[in-house]
Image (cartoon, rainbow, N blue to C red):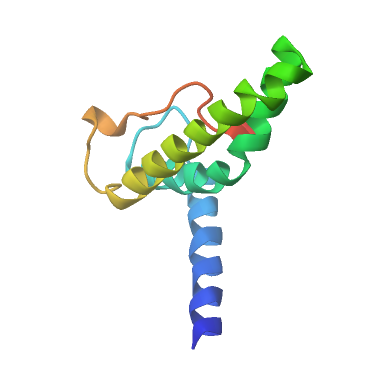
Length: 111
């Protein structure tokens, strides 16, 4: 039974990714909001190493291993919460007009 659920989850994620790919990132609609939510949930998994790498590039290796680690942990929690919120409320136009909550970077995986 758990294999069937896992397969269904993969298909839902793949389908939502295709829906998101068909919409422009400037369009704010329910499909875009759902895609943003799912991508934020998935991006939360790579937020710690991504933030550490970005801090290392900008401020050096020591900053990347210290402040980058802690900032990455905070960013992971924030991105996961925002992703769950956006995916869970995608049919509702909140915030106003389906605007994104996180702007910079909109999606970590796109940088």
